[in-house]
Image (cartoon, rainbow, N blue to C red; front, top):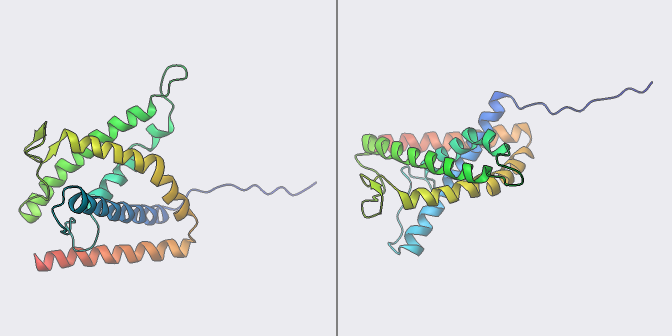
Length: 191
């Protein structure tokens, strides 16, 4: 009788999951910063300014938003909802992203106002805005961006991160954590 060895994929430890999510948070924060700078410099032609709340080239609100999408919409994205051959799941995911992004942006504006005296955007001139903090147009853009994150970028990032050895995963996430902690301390000290 042959010895049969079963290969089973074990789920990563909690510390490995946190390390992965920290890497995703950082990647999406950097991409958010790039998105903001491209809008500011090339689309609106306002000139360059650091669009992040911290010193480094990242907008953490994008990182938080992306993580919330990944965590909250994972199960919905995996389902197939719809009659017959119609799959309405992507439509439901799109509207869920809009709702989540709008709430995150609203909460983010209040946190920034509390910690820094104001927030970094003003949608007062936009149609269907609330106190200049949120508006329909940016929420729809975030919905489109969230779809790009969930259906295009995250599978690529996940594949790349899963290729890292456990040691490399922890080293990379540790460096990212140190960078973010140092930046937060810099913000607190320099006010």
